[in-house]
Length: 129
Image (tube, rainbow, N blue to C red; front, side):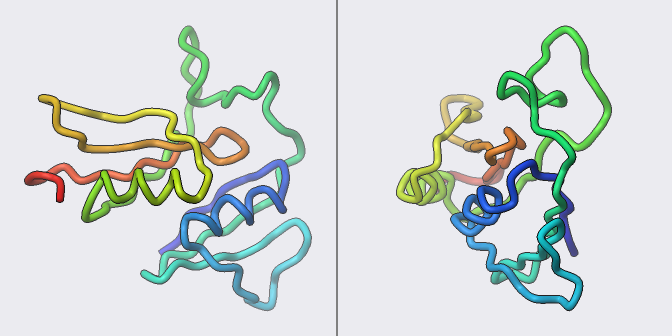
């Protein structure tokens, strides 16, 4: 139904998620500190203004190897083609921050939003297109 994400910079988050196919929608409760977006499949994205950003451009849930904190680490989206998803993300000017290749087959690519929250685009069955 929806995914809630706390963001440090609302305009940057709206731009990033817009590149992933989400469109801002007015739900009667939108403010400068709360926005709702929706994609063509109906998934809602609720963006909330965080009180602070990450220190040293690191995500507390993903970027510290010695300490693991509880919380949501990433969102994963099923795609018909990982190669196609990669090409689309790169065309949008987004940086691919990782990939998963079990047995040499590309199964997932990753990118991060402006607050370093990880987004995964995967296909784990059959061969890629």
